[in-house]
Length: 151
Picture (tube, rainbow, N blue to C red):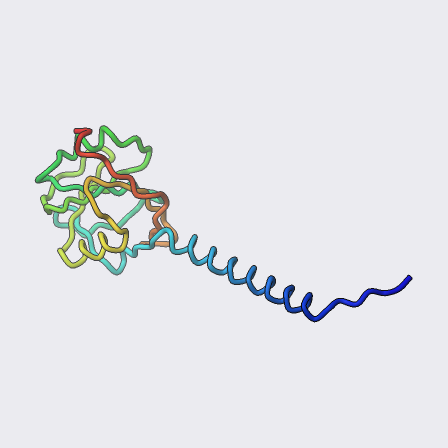
């Protein structure tokens, strides 16, 4: 039996194919890792009434709304979640904690960073965040938008 030699073209093609597979795997990993954003409550202060908010739960549902446009109680009725709700009002009104809803506020610069970090384009919107380590949370779901016609 005669041994068959591989051509140089086969080696070049195999090398190119291997490099392409590595590049695709790296790009996919970067895409999936950057898909969900991180937020550090230790570096950015939020307030409950006059106290600094320190997250205690492993998972929260974050609701971003404007009390000037929508009623938070109507919004919460539409959201089905077993997790405590962090309600962030763009209008910055301060409400008391009710059941599993925790209203939090912050300064305008931090609020803008938060909205930009999670790419919020309309309100009301909501999504889940999950604790990675103390104070550091990662987005754990896609951002859902409630239509204004639903109210």
